[in-house]
Amino acid sequence: MCTETFLRLPEEKRERFLDAAWEEFTQTGFADASINQIVRRAGVPRGSFYQYFSDKDDLFSYLGNIILKHLVAEYRGVMRKAEGDIFRTQLLCFDRVATHGSAADLLFERSLRIVRKNPGLLPQAAMQEQVLYRIFAEVREDMDVSLLRQQDETFVWHTFALAIVAVAIAVVACLENPEKAESIRCGLVTQLDIMKNGSLAEPCRESL
Image (cartoon, rainbow, N blue to C red; front, side, top):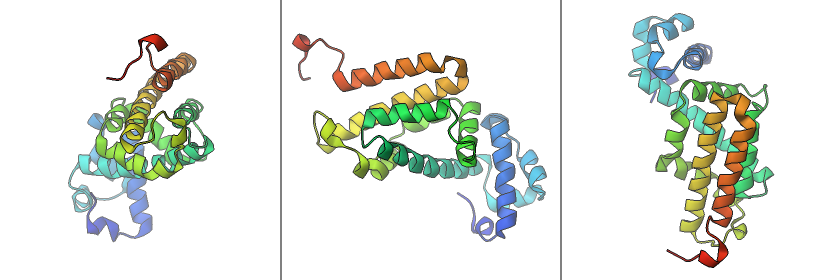
């Protein structure tokens, strides 16, 4: 987390520093990102970095929280567009990434670049319960749970979590291989269909 010193910086200086950080992390993976490059771009002494953040991990986490907050807001907007349908929401999210959404959304574009440079980041985040719960809490009231076989919170939660993990993996695959976007989408459709309808033939279905 950033320090109080960073928060008290003039807005212009704080934004210049963050722009430098975004540029570095969107051009290289986290492992190769350089504090020296960030402070050089920002035009501040290296010592100033440690007055703002404890280390590179701390700064990356700070940017990650900005990304998460933005993407949650975007996700909620997509779910509303999908009229609360959890499964249609995932496809609309995938389609937005596949077409790179709106070029005017700088933060969305930065998010995609960071995910592309750090391919394990999004699936890892999607499988962390605290991240999933945060998203779930934000969008829960927009879900149309009447579409589901059961409406109790545990069932809704697990359905949502499975769908999020599926789209996260599909998004990363699409960013790594954009030329395969159509086949990746078909795979996602199949996975979501299995979630909706199950994989067993009707006569073979039974509760665990």
